[in-house]
Amino acid sequence: MKFKVTMLSLLLASGASAQTVNTVVDVYSNDNNDFEDIGISAIHYFQGRQTRGPLDQFSLINSNSFISAGYVKSNFVKNTAVGGQWHSDTGVFLGAGYSRFDSRSDLSGDIDREIYSGTLGYQASERWSVSATVMDAEGADNVVMFDANYEHDLGNNDYLGFSYRTNDDTDFHNLGMSYFSTLENGQYLILNANYSDYDGGEESWDVGAEWYFNEGTSVFANIGDEDAWQLGAQHYFTQNWAIAASVSDSDLAPDSTVALNLRAQF
Image 1 (cartoon, helix red, strand yellow):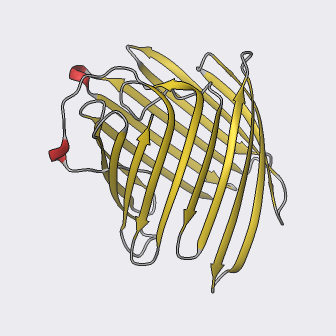
Image 2 (cartoon, helix red, strand yellow):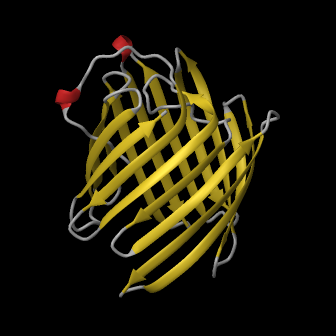
């Protein structure tokens, strides 16, 4: 679950219009009494993507080629990742990725692992897509993940989205649903829900909502199993710069986590 928060005093009225975004960069941190991590992630779309009204929202299914990179460091873990996808005019797309995971812990010992991935997929008219991703992790068996996504157009820029993911052993299943609605006076509403089943036993779920006062300012909330909750908001000072913060907690965490995020998009 991911949430964003900022002071309500930052609310500004603004008219909504589609913007073309080529590059998005996020610098973020998460902090509680047990750990602190900081990271940076970036993605560049070669042809640019149109926002859907809110400055951080795009179509559910992407048809643009891109490259991405990320780095995160915490008390005990470092993770580096690079990747990308190439989309052809026929709807076929290919992807590749690499990540390196380094962990230093008295409990689990030292872990250094590299993961390579390759993706083959097909998408049509930014309405539906199917793909298969092979992941080769050092010291582990290869895993194949299968994904299917569908966006149903409800008119007036609204949509109902569905996603499904499983693996080659079919012992993992994830179902997702999202609803996007354009309201009056330049406001928007997003509802989402996720359910996962692991090996026919362990289950997890979460539901959430995000309300946009305008294209740049939103507040949202999410709840899930293990008494998990998260509250947050986000504010764009301009069409290129945004700040966000969130507070979250669950029975699995000894303390609440405070997250901050600074975004630049061009």
